[in-house]
Length: 357
Image (tube, rainbow, N blue to C red; front, side, top):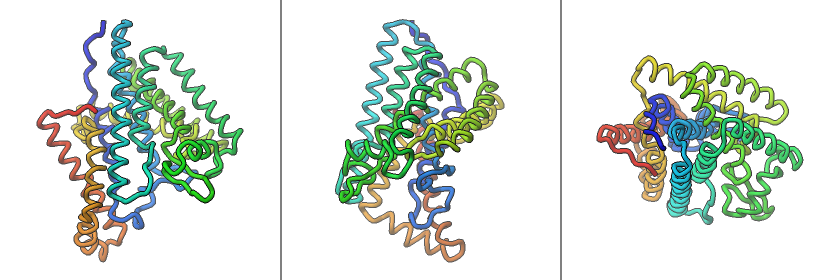
């Protein structure tokens, strides 16, 4: 039988909410030409705090799967959960497509981008949920190893991490063409940071989240603390062989980002679940996809109506830039945007509204 659903952990919701708030902070500055370095992604190799946001979210997708599906034991319940999981994955992928269509309209881009953040979340969720339902812990670890070492071997045999000349970029160019995030028609080369090949190690990130969730459920934070330190050490050492690279989601980046995600989860669990501190960010985490999709849609509408530029250049920039500089003004716009969505999600939580996409 399928037992009662496990209670939600405030720590998981809060950390997820903080990850979404961080996404909004780095995605919606007042002006892209004036952004503080830690709030930018690495140009290629390397790792900034911004690069850790998305893998932390995918890690938490895995943690949530482990906590919510742990009590599903019989075959019929597994089949039902599998179908439900892939339906949700499909909805996420379709929602990502709708948002990209809205961005085409708002920003007058000539080509539709096929893959993106929600599409990757959907695919990782579907595969990881399947692994949770039909693979034991050993099988999940084997899948993680095969994904990471197989992807590493594929990179090393086909050009390494050279920009646009690596296997992931070449597959993106071949399969997506102008529908990739970046594509040069003259050379036929392009790249998509959420492309198909680099989704394989991203699935490994989600599977690591499943194992972390199992440890948290069964043994508390001690194994997580140890595993976080081990993952950071592996990621750091591995980076001397294959560099951290979020665009390619390299194996060293998977280990490095998973280590930080584990330590953050330990911190949140001890503060919010054990000590009972107010779980700031939880309201955003409960409706994470709503916040992400809604903020995207709102940004598109503000851009199309030119209200975004009017608010920034007519209000914030003149008030802040002369004293604190253009980067501070740009950050103030992003903070105001995050604040608006935090308030909206808080109001939804107060009303008891939770929308599952």
